[in-house]
Image (cartoon, rainbow, N blue to C red; front, top):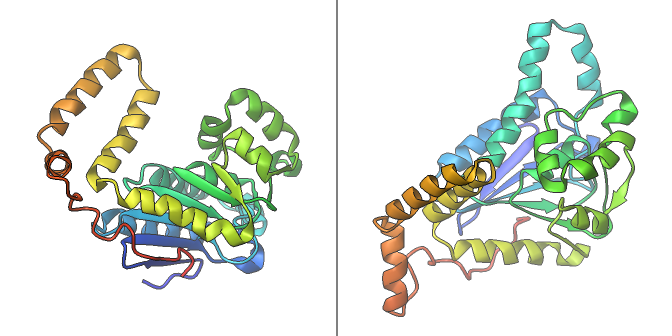
Length: 271
């Protein structure tokens, strides 16, 4: 499917590449991008051949947040329309956050406001040492509402008070310290760093990875007694799962499991 605000491709390894494609406005998000982003995310989720997804941007910026002209226009529409529009970003962030495949952020430039929300729903985020970041909403009389659950999960409430309330800029090293980025690398090292993460993912069992993502979400949001029952049930299911049988058998038989068919092939996530 052809999109106007994003591009999507899948390489021979089963790695999906989802690219924000409004470089003339620093990949600022609007209603159409949210619609197209949700459609593409659903397609990548449903494609059984997709093993991982890389999220990146076209041009010099990763994402400048919400398109300000689009947001200004929302002042002239009905409350019901405002509600429907506001839900779009919240829904896309949730779709990305709950994607059953690993989501790797290739953060190739600066990110502001809602762009930090996109980074925060990535399972792994690799950025550039030269990039700057800021949660700018307060400077514009706005609030970082939809992104707040994900950014707070990364940096914690105490840090959020500082960065949400004054809009200060910070560099990539600080973003790593805050937990927003996992690594910050030089420009010529970005693709290699992202591909290193991809190669590791491709050595893991696809269904197990999806189950582990759900496990992390459940355990991090429930109490000890709930987690006791939930984790025991998952282990019981695991011992009969085809992937577990294949993984254990391959180890005993000193061979690679069936899912490691292309784990070491060359690929550039920016193709």
